[in-house]
Amino acid sequence: MPQTAVTIQTSGQGLYEITGHAVDFIRRSKVETGLLTAFVRHTSASLIVQENADPDVRTDLEAFFARLVPPATDASMRYLVHRLEGPDDMPAHIKSALTQASISIPIGGSGLLLGTWQGLYLFEHRDRPHRREIVLHIGA
Image 1 (cartoon, rainbow, N blue to C red):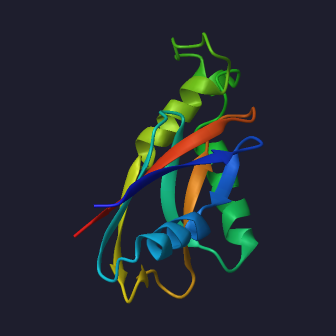
Image 2: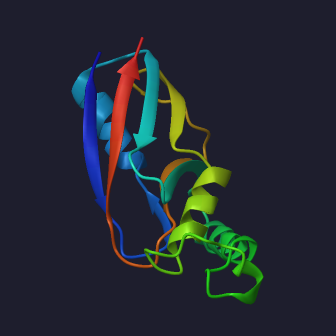
Image 3: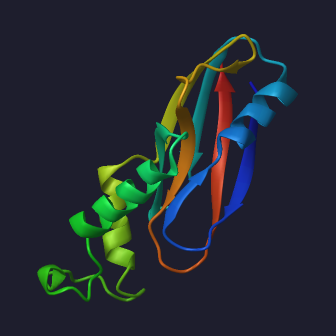
């Protein structure tokens, strides 16, 4: 079955839509029916399926996660032990644990069977820019 890896350059925390990468991969693979699995090869970023019509949804999700898991410099996070990679690292691992590293989406008619307003996103949890690798795999 077809498999590839895509690299996404992030500019810091936020949601980066990667639906187009998955659609292009399916088109090149010439698969009509199957299952796309996307897997992010990092422990401080994750994948989500979310609305891609109104950018306010992304803004609100980012604000919610920032309130839910503040940086290690916040007084509420003083219990954290892992701080070697900066005040955003352990919170990024927590955010990743609350979301997912892998997502499966059905393929039909040579396309992703997402809902009308759904898109596939890389959710970057670190403050600094990173190069994130996502493995895309199509199974029957």
